[in-house]
Image (tube, rainbow, N blue to C red; front, side, top):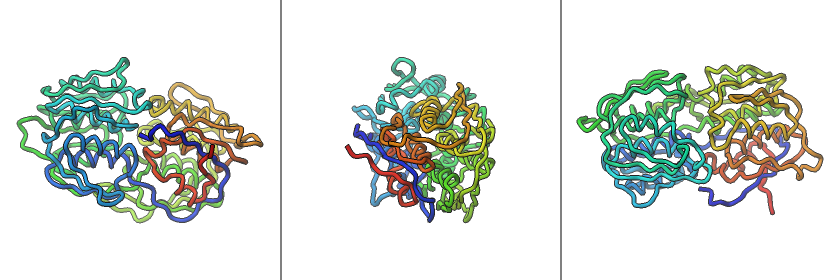
Length: 450
């Protein structure tokens, strides 16, 4: 979705991070708000919508399926819902761009439609495994074909009679859980999803906000659907909180850069999303919450973070699912800490937009940090960063992964000199305007020129 345009950054030591900032809206909530508002009866208004390429791709898919979506101003959407059975098939493939969340959740929605659909994505998404969602949806009666190895495109056959199942996820995944719950709206009987570890519950909370009866608690969710139900999703207004995953880069940076005192406004504090906060506090970070309140069924708070010396820890496996997207940033915190930080139980990182374990290990090693990589994690030995005297000679490949690129930009703020971060265009998929906001806060970051 970034148009194939190559973009690199030059990054290096900046100043302490200070002031007050607000990061963009939560990507996970924005995806789900568009989906459920489209399937609801009536007009829903979404404020705080993330203007990222991933979320725009999801909105564009539903427009292709016959939903009218207005954008009266930035971060705002008005969605004219068509009801659970009001979508119209598209003769063209539905392009999810780089959005793994979009593709997996759409597979659940489209499995219950009367028409055929094809889901495609960009080069990165086309390498991400979809078997984990295809298999349980097939058990519900869906017919989904894919390329070898369960890779996109996904060809979804319409007109299938779905039935509710009880499914135990082999690997904790909010995306797979959500796909099954959305398919469950169309399935006869009850759909029950059990998790080995609780994952973020945005879909469950939002289904409830849109008026669909759902039972959920950490580790299990139940929803009932089918042709015989008179239940409907009812339009509602959604206020999207600031994205914790986007805030994570600034939480780590301000914790690691001496002299920093930075406040992040109205950050989403869903307990299934904030494992990084627990990990940073265990490492000695000084992060204080203020103005805690409920907005649209989600807890939000201001987060004031001040520099504090960090120490290495063994990251508890119990919080790994609650911080799976924040591990690239945690790698940088660990590199800045005194002692070793051990991560295990995070094999999921190998099948994200890149192999994030390998990408962050390689990136930190290039900056002089010792990292011992294992199959499901790594040990990061905190120490001093190093770059060549001629920083232009060092270029670290982000592998087209937005979170790797932003994490390397954090690391640069603690380095003695500049270097290049290559292939950063995909930052726009989740955090449009990151470079400008980072510079305003204190980062030394500029776009490389040819």
